[in-house]
Image 1: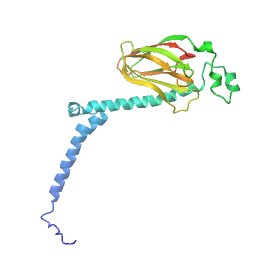
Image 2: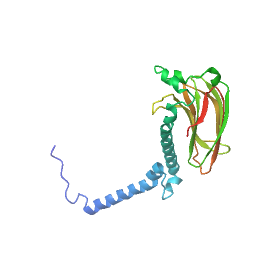
Image 3: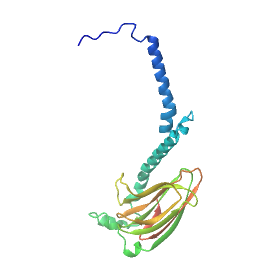
Image 4: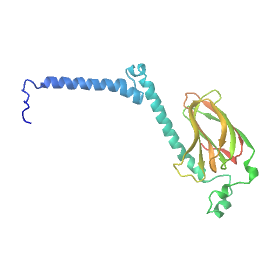
Length: 221
């Protein structure tokens, strides 16, 4: 095991050769950082090579998705105060039915069916807004909303009464959408609706039309 011959001093790389190899490796790393890593991860492209290779577009999508995720994660926090105290219910009934929290908020049948509304919200660039319907489990609402020629990002979701802070139940979402329509069926007693955000550089007006079985409609944000 000791028969291997040790290299002579002439066979070892010189200090100059080691320095040159180190400099070459450092330059290659910097080139990869500027032309590949920065455009694809952070949408920063000082040389323009990343956009030619399609990497800058990838980075822009990643940054936008990260911003969308941060905005959506912040939304439930703003909703919490409105969810805890359903405004449509009498306070005395809530106190009397401690053992069944959902019972006090159940309205009489004539208050649930046959409501119809139209609401419009103007969103400045970067601004978000939310409208919620108070519904009972199984109730259905026909809806149609339009950005009136513009485009918005949206998230359709619901929260039960007294929902935990991090609770989330989604019905659907989309990006740069001009309009959407369908039937919203409540998965539980609570508040269900839409959050919109204007990611364009121009003001957008969102108009929402609803018709069906719901107790009340309210702009939350």
